[in-house]
Amino acid sequence: MSDTHAQTAPYVRDSMLAQQPPPMTEAGAVKWIRENLFPTWLNGLMTLIAIYVIWVVLSHLVPWFVSPTWTATSLSNCREILAASGEAASKACWGVIRDRWEQLLFGFYPSELYWRPTVALVVMLAGLAPVLFGNFPRWFMGFSLASPFLIFFLIWGGPIWLPIAMAIGFVLAVAAFRALVGVNQIVAVIATILVPVLYWLFIMGPLVDALTSVAPIGLESVRSNQLGGFLLSVVIGVAAIVLSLPLGIILALGRASDLFIVTKLSVGFIEVIRGVPLIVWLFTASLLLNYFLPPGTNFDLTLRVIIMVTLFSAAYIAEVVRGGLAAVPKGQYEGADSLGLSYWQSMQLIVLPQALKISIPGIVNTFIGLFKDTTLVLFIGLLDPLGLTNAIRASTDWNGVYWELFVFIGVLFFIACYSMGRYSLHLEKKLQRENR
Image 1: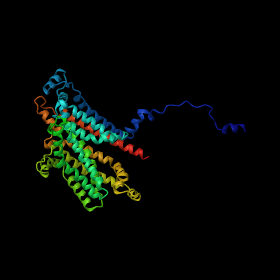
Image 2: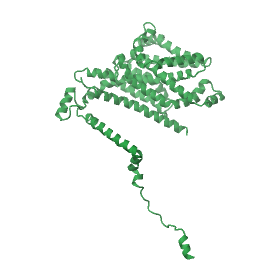
Image 3: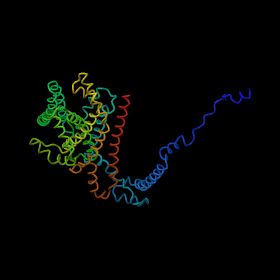
Image 4: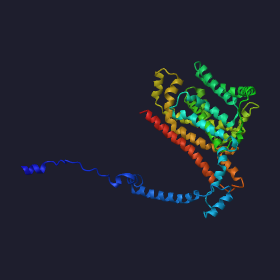
């Protein structure tokens, strides 16, 4: 009996075993490599091929990048430095970046006034911060609304009354909408567009002249043809991005409207703009836009380009937002109606926030493409960074330099576009977290 009991009684350990480390293949870098690079024999083979290709590319690029030519003052001086150091003559000549980086950033902007676009960049970032990240005092939104006019004043200079008079046009637009929205929504929208346009065309100029004659306060004027380089790309890109988003939302709402005339006008505008390449619209802005303006009106070329790029981007934003509106469940519209909300209230409080959240990837993608397309202004005579490469190479000092300039410009655009992409991911994660 005791033997049987001894054989069948379970064994109970009276002390714990010491904790053992996981197997080498199940922890740390070895686990990551096994799961991500060599999970199967086919993936392992592709990994080895990819590593070989990367090695071949880097083995040619890295020696070209690592070049002791930052202090060179000309292409011939680069070759002398490389020959004296025993380096290959085919290495990069980075002296052109050190010598011309200010021109690539600011174009032909007066060097003694570089502080103005630099301060304008700081103002732009500070003005965008409450819009992009929130968590700012409510009063700071006033600075965000005023920042575009302050940036305009800093970059172009001139009398201080010009940006103030431009801001009055937007105030008139808001006043016209609020005054007429209770009477008729269509009339309110039309008045919101026409009132500021008529004010800017016929009243703003004489008003600025009168105020300037009484109190000539301002900064030294800078002509638009002095803008160039990355500064020009940022001015056109940021202005078009800021202006095209609200315009695109309005066009999307117009296309989804039940009103026949509003729908057809929105559809016609979107399809015409999208059906023609941007370069054609830029030539239109450069050559033909003045023919549609009142006699004696002379729009600055940069301003005309901003208008055309804004309209072009707005057409694409409208289609992206329309996709977001279509993705909002029908029950959201019905819920807004059941609460007794007006059309504008339901759009502002319920429908548009959801539609814009859905449309974030498409909107940011459109903005990134728009920012890169600013280089097309080269074809109408504006000297963006790519246009300045021709001017730099025309100098006898740097005639023959190519890749170094393009690499520098590519890095600048990559930083800007990558930042927009990362912000898009941040915003998506933030909105998903808030909905949990």
